[in-house]
Length: 253
View 1 (cartoon, rainbow, N blue to C red):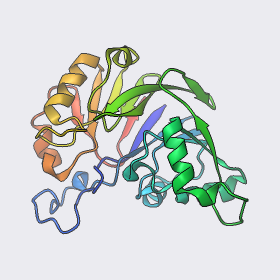
View 2 (tube, rainbow, N blue to C red):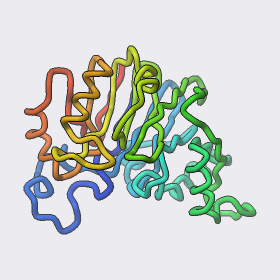
View 3 (cartoon, rainbow, N blue to C red):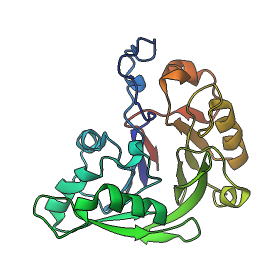
View 4 (cartoon, helix red, strand yellow):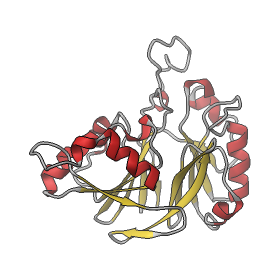
């Protein structure tokens, strides 16, 4: 089982349009960050986490030819607005795409992509929405999916655990009962937006504290803004076993 990080940037990506900072002008490929998304692969099963505005580019770069399901963490644009680009997968499979989301998020998808859910029209994407919550695990193919309840500021959203791998983005806080679901996780991906505090995202200090509480063998920080610094600068601030994520990174055995 492997998790590929398709994008590791925040909502504006890195570089940011029109920005002259040293991060946005870095020549290090690790500092070129598309919007946050990930792909879980296990045998013949491919599960996509989030469909941001860079989805087409991410699917092409990773060479993804089929998807079995999409998991949505929440409804913000940088995690959902690329949903229309599931069309090629519909055309190849001849079937709707299974999309799993909180009831609130599913309702927002239906509102914002209403054309998907009307009478089938050739050429338009097709989606089957499945509502989930943090209490109930489920399977996609042979992959067990354990949702993790997260607070993104005050907004309840989801992270996901797949056996030894956990993927948590847009975290500001986790309740103890959700941290307990992460017991024994080996590989953890978690967000750290910047050095300064932020009202709805962990900063680096908060992320490192939460990583220490969870206790994975290895952890990677993602959803990184240009305010954090260059990848090489961040690496010098991390304890053993914690790493800076970058686009295209593969995690797992």
